[in-house]
Image (cartoon, rainbow, N blue to C red; front, side, top):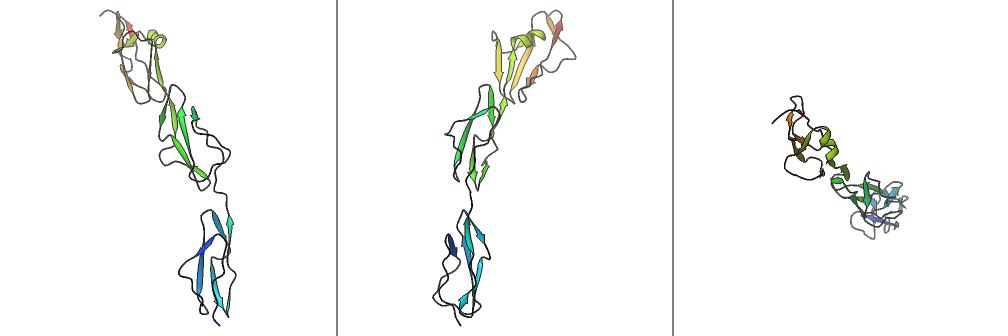
Length: 192
């Protein structure tokens, strides 16, 4: 015996064209809508004029909880307890920190994911007068500044203060800022 029209399943669609009459042994496949999980077999079969039991589409929570905390950063968008799929949370770094990677995360299928590199806030390097004084050095190109803030990856050039000579064991006088760390060169007393 043939079967009549396909049973309706809430929050699901059938694959293929729907007809009024189906032959014995024919199968129909259901696909639950986004945000729903298939419970039971996704296929039904026409047997002796009746369809086998259709699946059930159970709603799943695809929202995201609180936005992830990023060290040394704050959220610039409105904060919520739950976020809908596709919601985006934007970050900015605190002062003296440099943003690396993307500046946002996106709620996707119940999890926070990043379209670009995850936001990271790296500490800046500070070339201070005190640290330079201990090593008998000064900034090569910027005269009269007590501090210089530079970003991770930047290079800072130093020179010996008047009356001092570069120590042969010193690190290079062109130092690179690496995630908040700066290796200072040093000079020893001498004459120029």
